Image 1: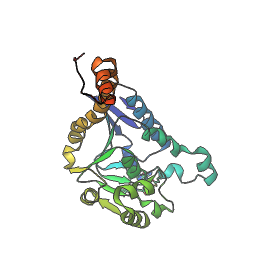
Image 2 (image 1 turned 45 degrees about the horizontal axis):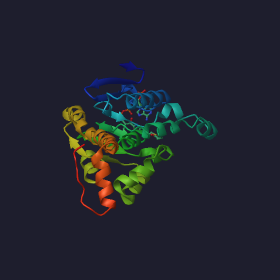
Image 3 (image 1 turned 60 degrees about the vertical axis):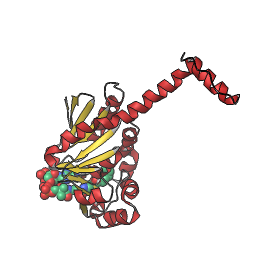
Image 4 (image 1 turned 120 degrees about the vertical axis):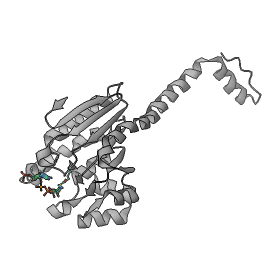
Length: 236
Ligand code: HXC
């Protein structure tokens, strides 16, 4: 499905969301924010979706927040509009989200990748928080999350110099889980749906656990423990 700034497809239990502003290297404007967050919420509510993969183009996952859109805003407008707050709904999504990153993931693009549950990178990926070069600082959690991913020293260096990090370095320092050849990125991201069996499995396990409380054996087993005797199970 095409929806302005994103494309959505379904592959089995995987919902693939592709950022689609190629002329602006997928710069994140208000419309893209709204549409991506809505797509994630919609996928999260769909029980047939086990995993969401967010990706961009071969050249850019996303080159940051849309500089053109924000350049002229005043501090008061930025504060009142508070449109970065919408990302809190994205991070609240419970369905696992994988960022499949090729090319530039800069500024808000790097932050978006880090808001996902994990990052799978093509060997062409480049990560960075170059906001300092624009006279601003990261705005959707970059300074906070990068520090947690790669440690204070490297995160400080990245934010204070604005330099980019290639895929190999990103894997070495724990920012990404795996690096794969660029032409394998989506195949790998989609095949990683088995990761979702973890959350599905945890939910299933919890339901089964609750259901055991309808059985004789649960009552017998727990009572026997409390009475310090061996249980007599009837498998009922
Ligand atoms: C708006 C952008 C953009 C951005 C690129 N473009 N990045 N438009 N916002 N963040 C546009 C360019 O203006 C240009 O449009 C087209 O995309 C192609 O970009 P080029 O610069 O011509 O491509 P190239 O020479 O290959 O360089 C690629 C690049 C460079 C190194 C990624 O575009 C770049 O440095 N972009 C800005 C990266 C950045 O500073 N990001 C942080 C943004 S601030 P035209 O119309 O000229 O063809 C941020 C704050 C986070 O993210 C706050 C929370 C969201």
